[in-house]
Amino acid sequence: MIQNFGIHNLSTIFQSTPVLLELLCILVFGSIIFVWGVRYSNIKDEFKHFNLPKWLRDLVGIFKFSFAIMLLNDSLEIVHFGAIGIAVLMIAALITHVRLKSPFPRMLPACSLLCACLIISYLCTGLLAKAT
Image (cartoon, rainbow, N blue to C red; front, side, top):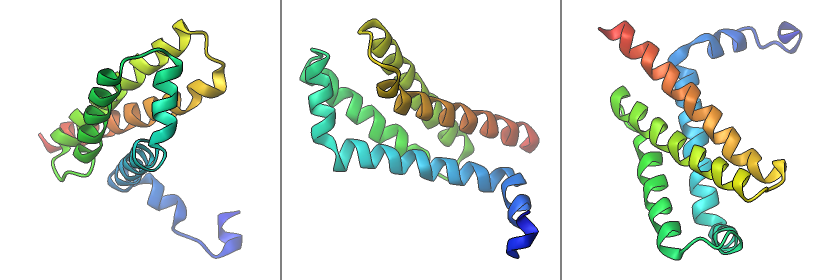
């Protein structure tokens, strides 16, 4: 089916681990910048809705930006650390949503970022193992 559109190499692009890793890192980085930068008012409302303190919101924001920047590094170890850091934050977000009985659609962004970061971590682990 891909060949019908004249795109012969699309499947091979996504079989390449480094390309997939870079795409996922850019996607996660962009998502965090968009949500915590452009749509920051929604973050403030959500933390207020959950009765979470401002200092915690600010601390989570600092960690998210720091980990997101790590995803754009050339070092696989740093990318791996950034992905694990965001994954831990997403697990905490999911636990918070479950404890407060949020509907699933409100949990979907945290689930998506968690899955993306776990895939990034897995890909980094594979590439690091090949390098040694």
